[in-house]
View (cartoon, rainbow, N blue to C red):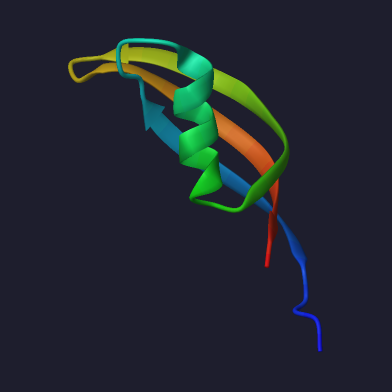
Length: 61
């Protein structure tokens, strides 16, 4: 029997590290599932550094 796939909406906050941004986003989203689409919906500079809000639709198995 095949496992069910679920489509879910997720939102996460990413504390940006130095270096290329795309691999950081892909790594953060991979922990949530397989992303179908994603967007940066907010960016903020805080005492800890640059924070990005990422909203995505992911497939969870």
